[in-house]
Image 1 (cartoon, rainbow, N blue to C red):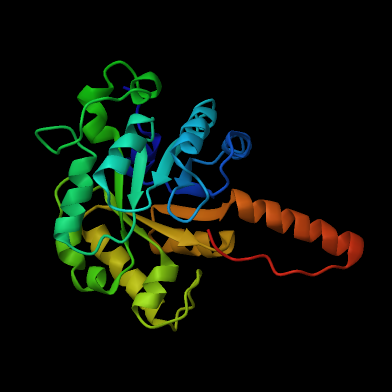
Image 2: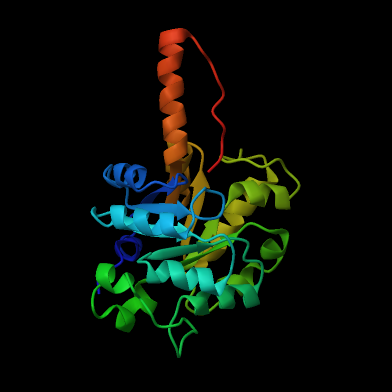
Length: 262
């Protein structure tokens, strides 16, 4: 089976540089994949992407060395299994709030006896190799998003879930969970920032991968020095917006605010 390069980078202590795909286009995915990202995450939660779009995007990404991941829209086994069958090598699951939900997520990513994933890797065996099913449980990266009030209260039990590879922090929802305005790149004097470091510390103690969504590369670099193993910067839609905005400012003096988000 094709090795998961993200797991290899984690084992070597090297940071994983990830970006985000929100546009339902194989061409924009191909353009992004050719820039040299370690991984690209297809956003099926807040992006505009459905399953047929995602399959085309996975095919485009697979022409490069970039590792394909997806954020599913919910902790729903059918969707998780289907995107894995399409050749996704990592799944980010939103709103995991307790041990039961974490176990449900992990088991959907694994074949029996470790889980209840149904067999049918229709494209995964093409991308991953003919022995995909034999090794998939170990190679697929499984990241639970910590972003709710309940998740903060039950952090230890979530992180102790067998076969969970790590966590991914969504600062916007996490901010809402602690009573602050949603956003990225949280200042050090905020409740959200303090919670982010607590989550990071708890993950490190268990040798779990810790990922974080960032608004700027400068903040992402800062969080790598803090110990995060995976940092997400930008997205296809944000790069289009910021590039157009920059040129228009130079040509017409037009200053518009680019929507901040995924």
